[in-house]
Length: 74
Ligand SMILES: [Zn+2]
Image (tube, rainbow, N blue to C red; front, side, top):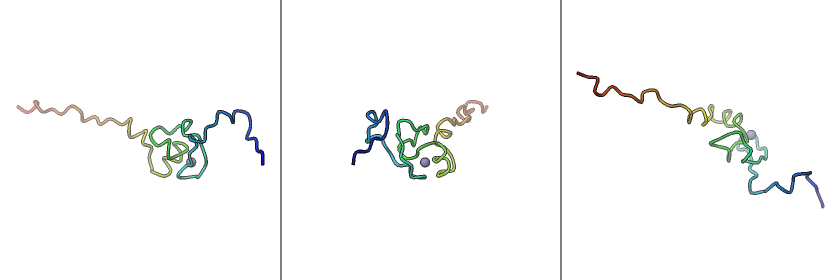
């Protein structure tokens, strides 16, 4: 059996192919728009659908309570 996937298949490395944990779709994890879980989900949609949120949103979230008024008490 000699199947040709198409042009550009030569650059397709199987080691970079992952199966999405949610939708089962095969994808190249390097091209996944998901940042933190690109090895697990094919994209942020599946990531958010499975987790209920995106880790990307969590990572960008910085608590505003950084400056505690320790010396403010007099
Ligand atoms: Zn998916």
